Image (cartoon, rainbow, N blue to C red; front, side, top):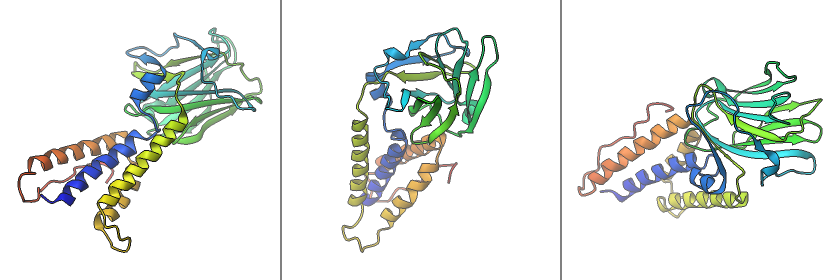
Length: 277
């Protein structure tokens, strides 16, 4: 078996996992160890459990902010956040992420008791949410009443709204739509600098992997290294389903390579990625 060919397959698997798993620079296992978890399963839309902002250990307010919260969510559609002064639903903000099958996000508000929710900001957000990768949601309220919703790594800001009569936000809650399952992480206790260091280590590992597959002389052209560089922009454009399909294809190829490792003939296999190529 040609060693370079086997390294090529292993590297493709590593690269696809790196591009997917590090999308927001954290992992589900890390969040489960470091955060409070709120799970929604088979439940109709509505806010039932309310959490106090004052109980959050992580409220990273800066000098010009009255609120700065971070949540992570895993769901394929309709991740909803409720923000209010109390649980009477009088004057509230609702941030609805990835509605309409993960294509659109809205900022809604209710101005008076008994009134309907009104959408005041609407933003296209295709493929923003993920069932497999925790998505970071950052909510900031400035001293002048502007509410900013960031999805770091996707859109900063995603939505902004300046309220002339801003809420003194004391409570938050989570929901979803149409019994869509969702997993929320809040009150997380970990050092974001360690996340950045982890990302740096991943990048160094990726560089090392490429270096091992190519000549040390930078003047020597290597077709494998050239291919690896050309692959990254395509993977970056994949949505979650396409990345998962790509990974599954790579795994199948690796299985076939291992089965034929005892022969000298190069296995006739291919990576079958039906969408995105």
